[in-house]
Image (tube, one colour):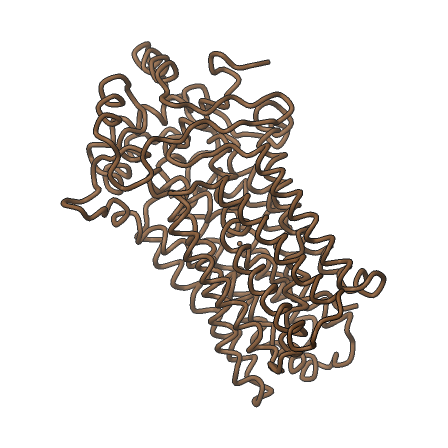
Length: 550
């Protein structure tokens, strides 16, 4: 049975030496770190050994203008903490009432998020013309081969995610994004000019490899480049970029309903964003955290002064030094088995496992049939409605991420998804007027997509790099996204079989149950990261932090 187009992920995506030189911090830096650790304001409560993390109180301000007493306390009592570029106020925020602290960094993260636009485009590009491709390349009527053309993308993404860590650790985010555009451009070109099934499979596999690397890399880059105060909002650019890419592909695919060769134009067009990424990243900054990690402290300081402001440079550099002081070698995968990295890896893998088994693949696949019941017979048009709903949810999430916090959005998102699932089950399982039943099904489907885009989609990709240490961030993300692609493939492969065995109502009820379980998981095990710098979070979760409970 042909698996559905892997749309789940939408709602959901200069070289340095291999060994980092020891930073050679003196006694003054050690004392600064000690002061920083002792004076952490409102620090996160440390995790219980069984992962029962509890949420500490957020900073007193969620707005763009934090209380002056907070800033004075931080600036007067600490060296190297996040008084300005994080949850505090500080340099670069602009004058008057306007909060423009995000302006300097926005072009850099926008350029990186073009990779997510390309991700979304490649998700949507096969949604309409797969039948035309099968007819022209000689495998029409073979559901297995049609499914293989779609699913080989996920296989490539699996290997891309698995190998992304080595590239990011050695080359940094900037160079890796540029190099990773090669398989994206080459794969799209091979697919566009394909005259056989083998060529199409090769092109789709190469594109999948590129997407697998980018889905790991872009959240890391944004989390490490964005000021703490705007990290959540800017992190939603991953989701927004993916949504816009899907909408663009579906809109561009409308002529394919009348032109059987239009799919080649669509795939040729997929080469263009890759060139934009290569050129645009040449002018983007490298992650200051990566620069500090490989010992390039002067370069890191220049980047911080450029995108966060000169006033933040000293504090930011002290924080970065405090977490890389004894880090002079490459991290290994085996470190994910040790404290505290195993906790974060387990949470990251669990979040993506729950995200996929909450049913996003199934809902997207079945949405075309749901819309057909109310008279919308065009599959592309139905998918376009879904994409626009997802985009709307992502915009709302971008406004709420740094106000309500990641944990609240994640819990609310999964509760909304559960309600939407049970609403659809009610419309299917109980004798209702046909018009009422169809209306409830469509409402439930769109509500599910919207609430997914509020939290389960964007928060999952944002919070994992926030909880990860600088040393293992790329490997935790690589592992987590590898779990994502495996679950994506499994759900897509067996969804229709489960529907045949148990019926749509029972399967959707199961999705609703997993959504409730996901909300419970988020409530018990997710730590709020809003308003805290990556270094503050890392020091709070480190076994070396004083006061940790054993």
